[in-house]
Image (cartoon, rainbow, N blue to C red):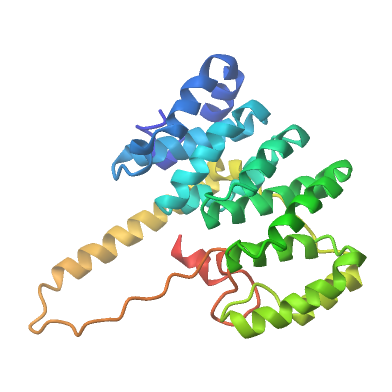
Length: 278
């Protein structure tokens, strides 16, 4: 079903798999870990997406290593269906997942987009479990203050600290904004964001329900979208070849999902114009 139903798998099937979690967890973990499933352009493409969603819904800390593998492949192959909700999926493991997430965040060789997702997951965990907040903040601070870390990850860490608006970090966050204004064309936040966070005592952290993917309305919406895209592709094919080749178009710079949207809205790219790229 994970293959044949593609993105039409109903919620009832997901719930049935969850009822058989003890028997099916290991096969789901294997699907998440194997690269070949993530780069398949047939119906198999949806198999690791479903496996990741269902595995995360088990809320089992022992499944985190497989989910971290899923995160890595999803980032490499730009599987935004998985990357977008992944912070919430990782956070679903609860407090027991904190040590492994901290370990991945502090891993020198971990890719920057993996670290960005883990920072968000730790933010959600610290918000939901206040007893681990200080431990999480200390870890995020280590990344933020690491001069050897890439600027993007340090900026994500700075935003992670800002979400909780610790009084002891206020001045250093203002200084960070000044630094980013000078060194980055796409800073994640500005002075007004810092002011707002400290006025409110923090920024709201809202987990995402990745199982919404299986709602009947969402499934129907996707099918309409695919049909519309098929019609558009067919129309382009009917137009035939152009009489003259199109002029070369410069390649667009890829905007990180967690970077500020270039449109100037102040929102993260993934929550603004990036939504249209899914």
